[in-house]
Length: 420
Image (tube, rainbow, N blue to C red; front, side):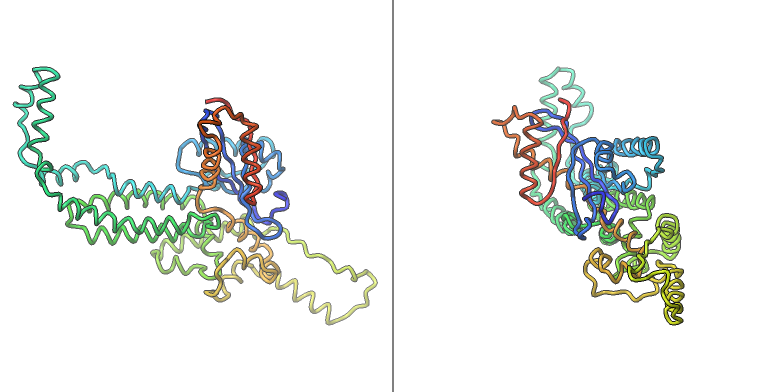
């Protein structure tokens, strides 16, 4: 089934230590099956073993993972293995994608726990009563542990927080809650199993816009201003990293209800020109020359009588094939009524009109927006391995999780892990 997938096979990968101390790697593959359904085949063998077992080296697609540096090392090693074993040139930087949920979480943490100590100190200094002098503190420190305890008690007693009504804190908490609603909405839009990569850039653009609005709204707010600046900086860092792979932009362009509209509405002109050049190069280098097999009608034989009309029709068909599919697609009207781009590209009309471009579209529009599937896998396994079942071995866990998954409609396989 995997070998006959219509798209490339993409992976989400994560590591987990089970409650009974088994080190497990979860490998989930995502692809469009021959019947057009988007599949998430869960594996837990080493990545190369999975590739070898399923004979999908030529179909290995993108890896959607969190931002841990060991994932960079892993995909670089995989690139070397693919080259050594199959002579496949696999650009690690191009195929290494970052989980949108993890990026949203990092931006939210930067907003909540910003490292601008100077700004935070300035804010605290405006809201603090006179604290013990350094001379007083040093005098009591010389008395040992009891003196240090004295200093702590005095500091607490003299702090502004001890007597404050916390009205300003409640106002700040309300501001934080209101601002975090946009993170909640962005997370929901990309967390489902059906959420794929075309949703990533719009959610990041949405959040960056909220930060820009926050920076303006709270420019004079000593508490919120550094929060907004810190969150914006973190999100902008990962937004810049999406430039390493053109699939983020190509995914949006290959949505017939969108094409270049989102970028034209939200990006500076110089960004758009650069993005168009990258997607054009990606199309020409990876997909434009894809061999398209056109079956010969069974009734056609060498002795067929010459027909001028049929000869004219064949020439017209050949000339149509010479037209650049990507250019033809962009020239066609935007289709706002299309709700599911992947289903649209699976239709026979598009497969015939854009034989090579439809392959590109299905490859890209099957990439997940997040690497959440391994977490779902591990959560289910954790329920299995309770305190009363702490002695379960890997084979028992494998059998139980396979049965759970098959009953749920997907396929899971486990491989033995080393004891942690």
